Amino acid sequence: MKNFMNKFRVLMAVLTCLFGVTIFFINSGTLCNMIVKVLHLRVDPKFTGGEIAADFFDDSEDDCGSGSLKYPLSSEFAEGSLDLLRYTVHEPVYNAKWQQTPDYWQMDLEFRGGPAHVRNVMIYLGLLEEENPKIEKLAASTVPLFDLAENVEFAEDKPWNFAVRLGGKQGKVYDAKGDFICNAELGFENDGKTVKFRIPLKEKKLQRVYTARETYHYVQVGAYLHVPEVYDILGDNSQLAGCNEDKLSKVIVKPVVADMKAVSNHNEDEDNQFISHVLNKLSEFEQGAENNSGSSESERSGEYFGFETLDQALSHFEKQVKENPEAAVPMAYYGSCLAMKGGQSNVVQAVALVNKAFEYMDRAVELCKNDDERVEVLMNRASVCKSVPEAVFNKALIGAEDYTKLAVIQKSAMKQGGLLEDEHEKYTLAYLYINGSQCYKTAGKETESKILLQEAKKALE
Image 1: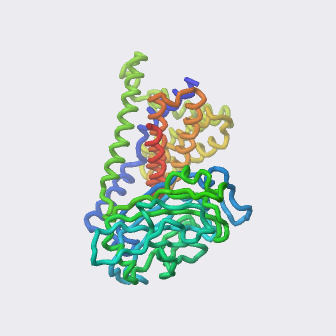
Image 2: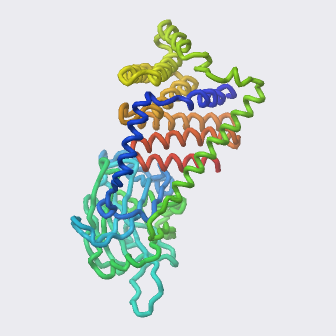
Image 3: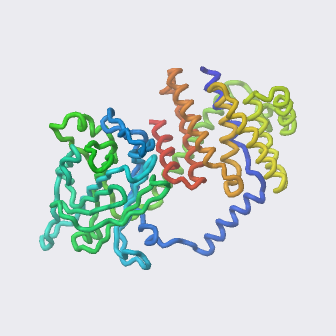
C-alpha cells in the first residue's frame, strides 16, 4: 500500500512540470485574451438571464429520496435524470430589449442526466421584504401546493409566496393561495440536463421580487406529475429521512437563502486562495520527503522519469514498447515523452507529436490490468491533457475524467490503508480534484468544475 500511495506523489512531482506545446500556441491564447480585454467585449446579462445573485450546488448521486427510493422502471429515465447538481438564482431583469418578456426573473437548474420531460420539479419561493404597513403582505404558506404530490412541509419562519411547477415542457406559476398566475418560459440545453425558466414579472405581486432583500428557495425533484415521492431536494437529503415511507407524518425541510445582490468575485478569490494553499502544502510535503531521503538538488533536477535528458527517456520507453507492445505503463510514459518533445518543436511538428502521443496513451489506458497500472497511465494522460492547448487538441474533458478516476482510486486506497485521516494523502486527493476541476473549466464545463472544487474542499474537512 505504501508503494501504491507513493506512486501518486512521484508522478505528481514529475508531471506537474509538463509544459505547453509551443510558445506559438501560448502566445496565441494570450493574444486572444488581450483582444477581448482591449475591445471590452461583454454580453449584456439581460440577454442571458440577468446577473447571478446566488449559486447553489447539490451533492451528486443523492437522487434516492431518503435513501431507499428506486427510479421508475420506465426506459425513458436515464441515470441522473432526477439528480439535481446546481441551482442558479439571477437578479430580476427590468426592461430587457429584444426579449420575449422584457421584465422577468430567471432561475437555472442543472441535472446529472436527462431527459427533462420525466421530471416533476416544484420550486417554492419566499420573499423577505422590508416592513411597510402601507403595503399589503403577500399571501404565504408553509404547506405544499399539491398536498397529494409531496409529503413535506416548510419552515414557519421562511414561508413561500409563489410556487413554480415544472413538468414536461410546461412551467406554471401559482401564488400561496393556490391560484394560477401565469406560465413560466422554459428553455432546455444539454439534452435536457439544463433547465432554465423565467417568471414574467407582469403581475404587480410578482414585481415585489424587485425590492426583496432575500429570497427563499425550496427545490424538490420528483418523477412525472403523478408520482408522489421526492427523489432529490436542494440541500441535505437527510432532511427527507422517512418522508417517503411514513405517509402519516410530514417532514419539515429548510430552504436555501439567496441575497438578491449580484455575486462579486469574492468566491473566486477564495477558490484561488484554496488552490494555492493545497499546492503550497503539497510542496512542503515533497520538500520534507526529499530532505528525509537525503537526495541532493543535483540528483532531483533535470530528470525525465528518472533520465537526465528527454532523448534518453524517449529512447528507453520506445525500446520497451517495441519489446512488449501490450505493456500499458511504458506505453503511457512513451506518450508523455512524445508530448514533451512536442513542447520543444515547431508548430507543425508539435501537433504531429502530440497527436501521436495520445495514440499511445489512449492505447495504454485500454491495456491497463489493475489500479497500479491505471494510476501511472491515467496520471500521464491527464497531465498531458491539462497541459496542451484546448483550442488545438480538445482534450481537457478527457483530462477531467482521468483526474476524477484517479481521485476515486486514491480514496479507495486511503480507505483500504487506514489513511483517511492522513494529512498528506488528503492533500493528494484534493490535488487530484483540483486538477480535474481546472480541466472541466478549460472544457467549458463550469458546473462540473465547481462540483469537483467542492469535492477538493471536502477532502480536507
